[in-house]
Image (cartoon, rainbow, N blue to C red; front, side):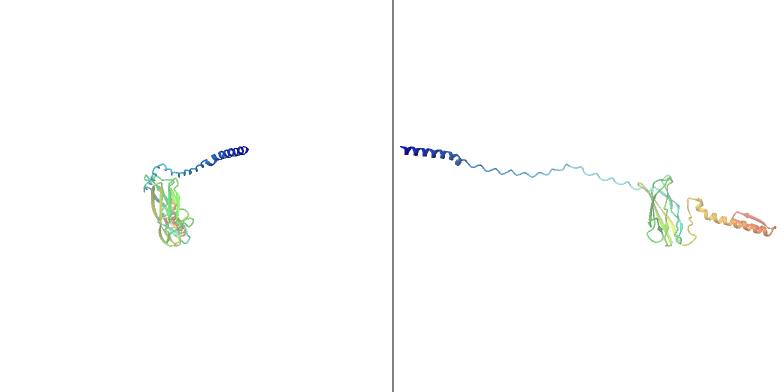
Length: 230
């Protein structure tokens, strides 16, 4: 009888252990994790429609309506021995012959041959007209090349332009530097005044000599010449 009881206890114990281990053994395996959903690449954003660029405005057409008048330097002789030249001077006017202030004036010398240079040994000189519409190329120095040359002058104001050519000659003659044309009456005729003054002085000396040598001689002085009547 004790043996059966022991066997019964042993069986019950085994059943309890089997019942305790059965759920763990029969538990289904955990399902594998679903693969992560791939991140979709960002779609490029379509740029907003842009309006077409505006076409650049066409420059205003150039109008050649400026008058450029030569006041000084036309047909002048420059002294190459002393390297002294006549400075070109111009005046800029509009269609109604009114002086234009603030116009840009550029003087250009020939690149080679007879000519010269402006300050800085430059073949060009740029300046602006004054309230009287005048502009001068100061500092012009002739070179050693003898002969005639042209100074090209261009005047511009906004889209308006005008030009003129000044002709000069480089000469080795010591009597050069006689401007045949200029804005000043004194500058234009000073050499004639000097020559006329010398003639008058000579006539006065001649009168004094003749009056002292003979009291019977009558001397008459007329403009431009001396006439002696016996």
